[in-house]
Image (cartoon, rainbow, N blue to C red; front, top):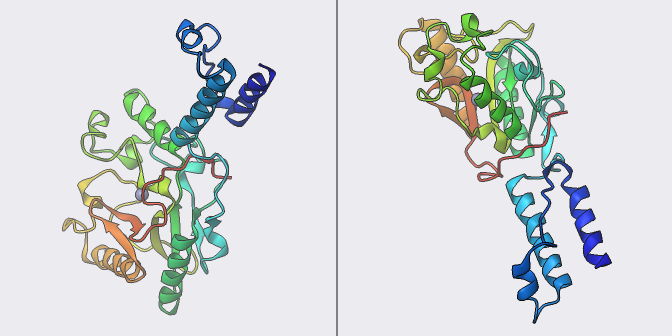
Length: 263
Ligand SMILES: [Zn+2]
């Protein structure tokens, strides 16, 4: 009994916020069926299963060793993490961004470093707007999208879009590839930090943000093409709706959505 109790306490510590009490003590079913296994063993199995289940539903809260700070690897990288501050379509910092840090898997950061080295002779650097995104941030976007009265960022980021259609039109989704750690939102800039003209700003919800949109001017189309070609060359896949969004094709965690905070 004491052992089982201690096991329960351990589970509570490990999964602090996720701990769910299980009404084992009051279950007549378990007591009736405990002829072969002792109640202790059944408790142990249930608690173990509960811990395993929770850790699958909510991945580790610690930053895995495979994640790095991209600024340490990518030469000249300009980091402008929009969701860590108020200059974004929501108009406030987003859940899970505790520091303006670009975290990526080492594989994605290394590929990005190669892109930066390729572009250096042109006098260009990379400027990132978002990197790894915790799943709690995606949940924050979802809650925001359902609140039709929160319109702080509308004029700058979605002047032509009815907020009610953000899900339907794919601007907001309930899961993001960014949570897998090998997706990055970025643009090209001069060494002094001036961004190249891409036709629309980052996170502008509009068909004009599609890389192939013919409505933007020739210089912007050329800059979008240069960004896409540079990223493709080092293994990133572009996204047909957003000129700024790229995913490492051979990402190390294709099925894992992480939730550790950015700090
Ligand atoms: Zn993105």
